[in-house]
Image (cartoon, rainbow, N blue to C red):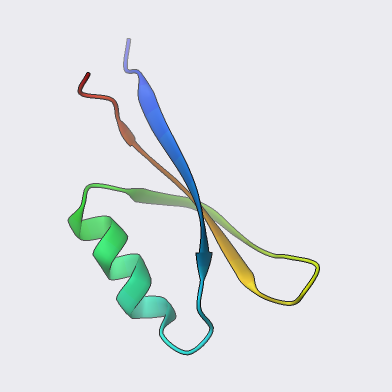
Amino acid sequence: MTKWQYQVAPIPLHNEALMLNNFGADGWELVAINTNDQGGLVAFLKRPDEG
């Protein structure tokens, strides 16, 4: 059974692709992206737990 690590991260509105590509390069997969109460983006990411 695969175990997962999760991360919740704010995504700046001026460079969304750069931030998401950086997470992807570190093995994180985008699961969802939502808008917070202040209008900013919040990314929910996961990757297999290697520990």
